Length: 204
Image: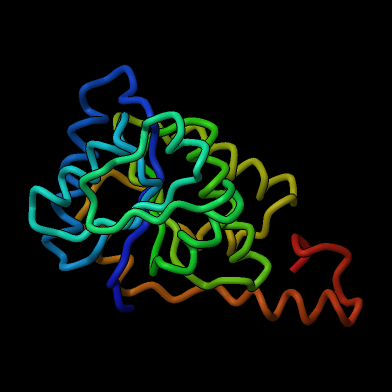
């Protein structure tokens, strides 16, 4: 698939390990090397600022999307290729979706999970078919992957939706997966649901 723009969700803090900052810097450089633009939350702090600065340093393009509230808190990055200021967090997520070809999560907190899981939910419902990936650092995302496996085992998540995302530490493998991505077919489950053949999506 075409990778003209890659959205990165990540922490507005740097985290407890220097490995997190190193990974954000390497990912930013790699995005620029791939000839893709970065779409992100527009902040100048934490891993957000690190990944944006790495793209810019490598000669790449960075598009930030930030709510006015965070601009007022003086956390907006003023050195980006383009900074879009929006009225709310909800508008921010929709705009980032519109701008992006793929979504990658680095370590982060509530906001990172909220943004990535909204994209996963939209994809599950057939509202978008863009790839989602978790770039791991020092095993940060492994507990979440275990939780997803539990969701499948307990039939709250379809197995195809669990496998329709990438998780790993190797950036080469990540970009190879993104370029070759083929989405799982959520439409077939929704059609079956409408016809009353399923009691839930997890029965598919």
